[in-house]
Image 1: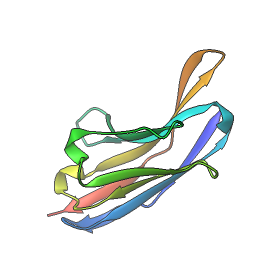
Image 2: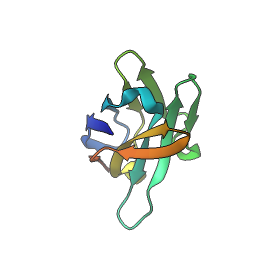
Image 3: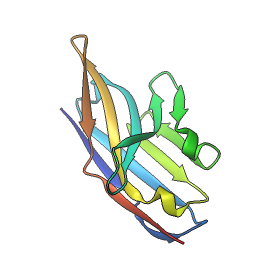
Length: 119
């Protein structure tokens, strides 16, 4: 089991910045990647950004140039720096851990943190 605790959400105005943090604990040796997803009301959960153990990262096209993902590998913490926020970024942001155990993939999720961007 992997536990994920998020922090950093809130209410901001368009153009502002926020930084989300997520710390993993538990069976952290199984983690292969940490990242962020988001879910807006009435929409499906979507990938925002992910950072693998090998240092590679992936960002959704909708946030490229505005968001950045980084990891503190020693502390098993992942950060999402969100700049130039837009109202369409409003969503619940979920921390995600991709793990592998005995060759099989398992996903773990945080409880989510609300990000609201007002126009």
